[in-house]
Each structure stands twice: as structure tokens, then as C-alpha cells.
Figure 1 (cartoon, one colour):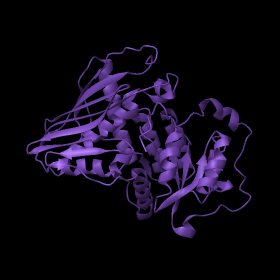
Figure 2 (cartoon, one colour):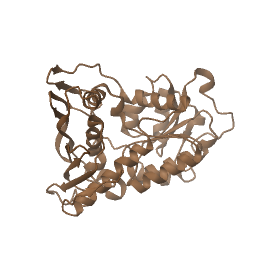
Figure 3 (cartoon, one colour):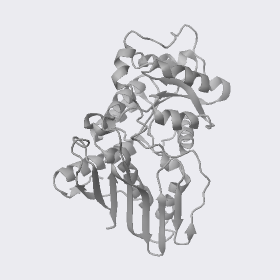
Length: 374
């Protein structure tokens, strides 16, 4: 399976229809019967997917067929026509089907332990907070919010409700990226002397939500550049203390009227290392490369759903392809059971939005150096 290009697979296309469909259309069957509880039968926690776009359909849904500690127990959609297929494929009971109007009724459903928010960026905060108020643990897709302040509100809501919060940083559970973490953080090839990461693709449909700043919060940086932000941090095992950023040349002013077309940035790490990142909606690349004292290591296809490739100065990396979404959701389920933090917590999501906020500020001020608070 090839990675689905984001321009061809927006997570949600319900925006125009959800409001109409939700009004007076409670297509969840009312809680006339006691909700079926997954935990008492097989020990698995129940997950509800909020948003049934292509990422849910192509990745998260199939991943939930391979999980050991959780399973699909609910769906939330603004498109009634999608419901039969999901119920048939995943045996979702009528009591596990919700729309955006009656979403808060999920609080009564004991079969659902976790809500996974798979919506446009501008909607993450609303549904994370509503899920927390419903007493459900939450995973939200990346980027966690539109800015760091939004992330903090989500963290506060989850803390107040006593529920866990994680971000969909799937690469932390993927073998090739985990090897980059091991090689860099353990200094297998000595100190890293140079590191660069980039993720870009050629975006299509000019009307999609990813090109609308009010919904996306920005362009390629928010969408795929965040992968490179993550890679620079988890490969080095360090967090930047300052950064600079420059917007790339804009050639299509109509398509990119409200968001950047491309950009590049530099992280200054505590030991003086400079980490270079870039992202674009007009070029295709997808990599992480590190030069160290005693060799080099890289991923030449770093962030896709499959087809990842990596090598070191000693030879190629060889790992079996896994579905990292399954590992992520299983880990979060075990974090709940074991009462431990998720390794991809809401605090990490807020951290990355702090960097993104600073990158945008630097860009808007001609590459001004931004000092980051620890």
C-alpha cells in the first residue's frame, strides 16, 4: 500500500454537510439497551474514531484489526452513508454510532474508553475538550492544535477530567524511525555533527481545507513539516534552544493565498549543533540524514505508511514493515491500564506547537532569531 497523498485524502470532508446532517438527525440508536462493554469480554479497551475520512478508513480502521489491547467500539461521523460499511466491517454496534450533534452522549457509553480525534486541525481542541468532559481518554491527530495556547487548553481539560491525552505521533512506534532514535541518542557513531530532515509533496485540490489557514493553521509546516520537527528532536535526543526560519518563494498566489507554499528553518541545539528542516507543498521529498564523528545514518523514505528505506555508513537498515498505528494505539491502551504517561503526550504536542509558533514568527519577521523557553 502506498502512502496516501494528503491532497488526495483529507481526513474529513464533512464540513459543508455535517451541520445540516446533524440537525435533527440522531442516527445513533438511542441508549435503550445497556451499552456493550468490551473490557468485560476480551480485556480490550474500546476506541471511538471521530471523523471517518481517508486516514481513518485507510489506516486507523485497519490498524484496529491488528491491535492486541484495544478495538474499534464507536464511530462519529457527519455522513450517514458511511455508517453501514463501518458497522459491517468492524462490528460496531448501533449504540456506538454518533454524529457531531449528539457526540456528548458518548459519556454514557461504557464500551468506549478512548476517543481518537481525526478531524481538521481547527477542530481538534473542541473535540478533545468535549471528549475529556465525557470522561474519555483522548488521542488527537497531529498537529495537536492551531497553536501552543490551544494545546494548553486541551491539556488543562484532560487534567481536570483525570484522563490521558496523546498525539498521533506514529513514527515513535515505527522500526526505522526508532533505529534513528537509537543511533543518534546512544551516539553509536559518536556525536552528531550535522543533521537535516525534510518532508514535502505537491499538493493538489486548491479548495481543500489544508490550504485554508483558519482550518489548517498554516501550510506544509503544520501538515508534514511537523514530522521533520519531530525527527530532528528524537534523532538527536535534544530540544532546540533557538531557531530561525525563512519562507520559500511563493509562485502560486491563488492556491497559497493564506498559507506558506514552502519554508525552511534551523534549530540551534544546546551543544551548538544546527539542525536543518524544510517542508513544501510544491516539492516531493521525505528524509532524515545525520552525519556523525564515526559515520552517518539516514532514512531516504522516512515518514510514509510503508516503503520506508534506511541505511548507515555500515550498510542498509533491514526491518520488517509494521503498522505503527496499531503499536501506537496499543501502547496508549497499556498506558491507561498501567497508569503511566504516554511517550507521545499532550505536553509533547504543545512543545512542538511552541516551535511552530516561533517558526511562523521568525518567518514573518524576516528570519529573526527566536530564543525558545525551556
